Length: 149
Image 1 (cartoon, rainbow, N blue to C red):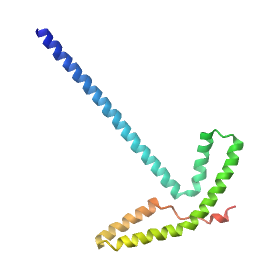
Image 2: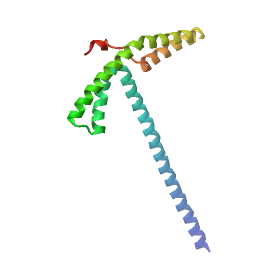
Image 3: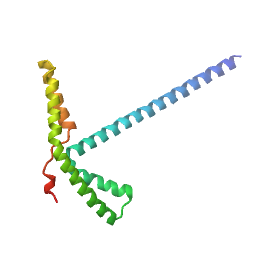
Image 4: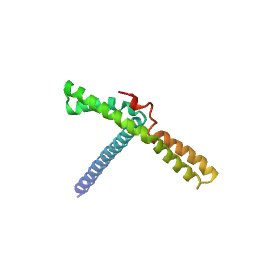
């Protein structure tokens, strides 16, 4: 009888250890999953902000990816490169035309929000608005894209 009790007790300890190991492995897996997802989001966000801040570099960033993803020949790459750069120039013209309106709209919003805040809140709002403007609004056009041809 005591052998059966000892055997049952040993099985419980073994099951407990197995369960604990499984739980630890699951926690490690989940933490890796979370870290990976957050890291991917940070990298993607920083790349998007970099493209917003440096739109002139967009063709140089996407063309090599297109070449690799589509397995382009050199002839295809050259032809597609011309197409992408020409259309990018046109899109930059449109951006240059719309940028002043975008900035004016942001300034109007900033000023209207400020009217509803206390002096202390206004200080905080100004720094928050500046951070948003620097981080999320596209940068002003660096030159007149219509001059490039």
